Image 1 (cartoon, helix red, strand yellow):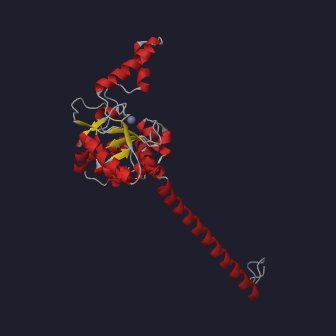
Image 2 (cartoon, rainbow, N blue to C red):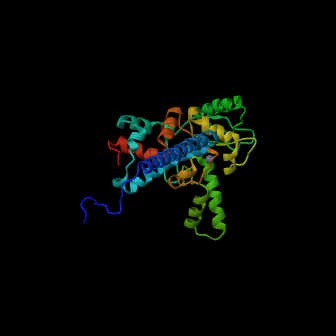
Image 3 (tube, helix red, strand yellow):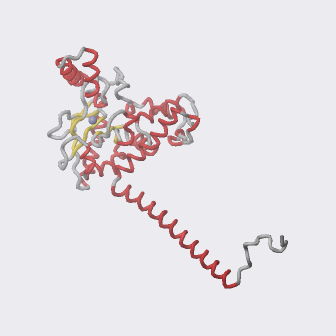
Length: 300
Ligand SMILES: [Zn+2]
């Protein structure tokens, strides 16, 4: 083998060939860079557009994604690379104080409202509202929010607010009777009723902090509300008045409630900002707060 030709298939390039290759390499680099910049710019503008045009989507996804990661972390904390404690950025004392805040009460199908949870109520419902009141603090916040929305040309109505445990009892019993009349035994009838109507004390509306909102352009409480100017306005502004979107689409598996764009929950402006910034739904936020409060290092 000829030692002067270690790569027998290669030959020295002529100067012209070297220039040509350099030029085509430079062109490829510029083209590659352009593609990367386009992709990056596209991504940024996509995100900006999502925020600007569909604030609900960005708010909802911001809430859902970390919520999902928290849920995952409970399954396999070893694999969890997110840092929920950093997301909330709180000390154990701060976490305990937030958990002790009555405005942060967690009421859902597994967490009953405490029997000693008492409050004053005040009326802020629309003319067609079924339950016209909310806790006074939430009611005042809603009225301020409604006024601000009106100043922006947007009408927001409170369609259903505080439901007393007594009222919830009558709803639940009526539904249970419906299934008993269909021939189900008592336990099954109650179970079936609970799937449709929360048992007394297990509806967030019982604590006076949940408000079903609608607007003249969409008076029914369904997902169509998500397409209204009122909903878009709420996604942009509700936080500063202390309200959060309680059942975002992406948090369905955690909340156990299907997407409800009309159901807003008052937690106070500071808590609302904390929750929205963390991206956690209330269930996950309370779980993380409890871990921090217990002195656990919530880093996964
Ligand atoms: Zn509701």
